[in-house]
Length: 59
Ligand SMILES: [Zn+2]
Image 1 (cartoon, helix red, strand yellow):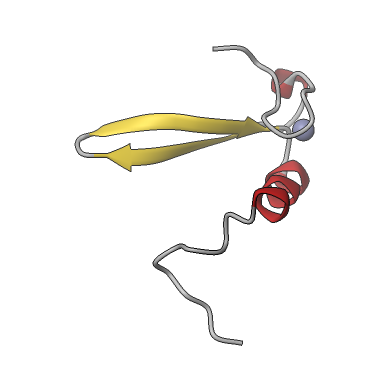
Image 2: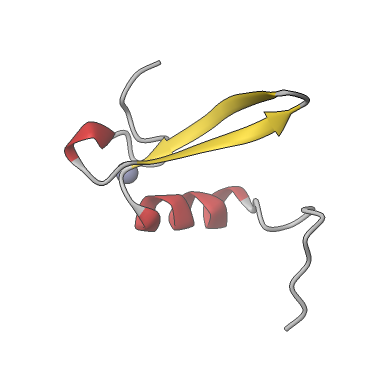
């Protein structure tokens, strides 16, 4: 696994890195790593990860 940000490709070890993992059965599978919350947020927007999730927010 590299240290590249999933969103922007920068070296996350030079920032306040965030790591994202999904629970699959008993295992946690890493699915992404980001420099900071800005990159995580931008990635979520770009990939439309908010849609289709089971946790809904009614605005
Ligand atoms: Zn980044």
